[in-house]
Image (cartoon, rainbow, N blue to C red):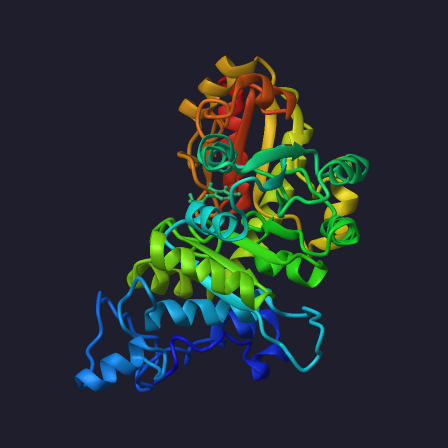
Length: 421
Ligand SMILES: Cc1ncc(COP(=O)(O)O)c(C=O)c1O
């Protein structure tokens, strides 16, 4: 049986394979007590059987490998974690070139991955530096939960390296530096490598955490660019089918993994085995899905940019986008998310969201089918208005998650929808 307590590892064979091969094969044998099922099995069990009282005691004491209880570890969850090692871990430069270890932990939600990582890293009196545009709940976590435990958050526009330098000068002892790139919902991009260098030059112990949900490891690998921790809402592209709420963190630091595992153990937040299995299945088609998401989003961004009822389009793939250069440097393509300001503000936006065909009016993103939503009243409603508007999240901003339908149908739907506005 795979040792559920052993350190995670990168499968060295799969490190030499392309992303698509790793997405399909890496991890498939990991954590599975039996090797006979072709598809990794779903161990939908809360607890595991000991062969004898002595064996149970040894497993509990850490003297013998074995599963105990699903909050503490589960074969199906291990499989997903092993696959994530192989996807986020490629090209990571560790101190010892022979040491290709990175570790992943799966969670019951993206927010659980983010909150558990921050709780593992920070304690009372600590400071977290955070991007000024992040998912609404991440912002809420900082302002309404972490602050109650004496953890202070300082915000910075991470796409401005001068601002990053200034905030680091002011807070050299911060424990963590967390940002999204591209951001939700403004699609602003920040230079991961440059930020990691600035952070490490200020304080080598400050951890750089990147929320890679919008890009996925197929398009961008923050650990290879110097980040210490990568976070995902697997709810989105990694699962890809809108059937799971889940999260994952991957790190190059054993002690960060161990501390975060300690938070899962005691606070909870481990995923259901069935959900982990669904995410693992979804990842197998991530490359071909992302190729189509990206191609469709590019076409749609170009269509919207030329439309008279659209004031401004936010998509880092457009050469006119201020974040195009940074995105081109660190991403292999620009993702499937597009935001835009509609002429006529919120009233026009409401009309479009109510009238449009094919696009489903729903939050979340990264599904195979296209979604449309209004950040100011939905995903980012919990961010105070002045802060929201300062970040560009105006009442007229619409965010679309471009699916993998035929692009001509999506453009026709947008064309017809905008005609009714
Ligand atoms: C960038 C980003 N990070 C984290 C989350 C939180 O993920 P979850 O809803 O799985 O908790 C979201 C959710 O939309 C997100 O967009």
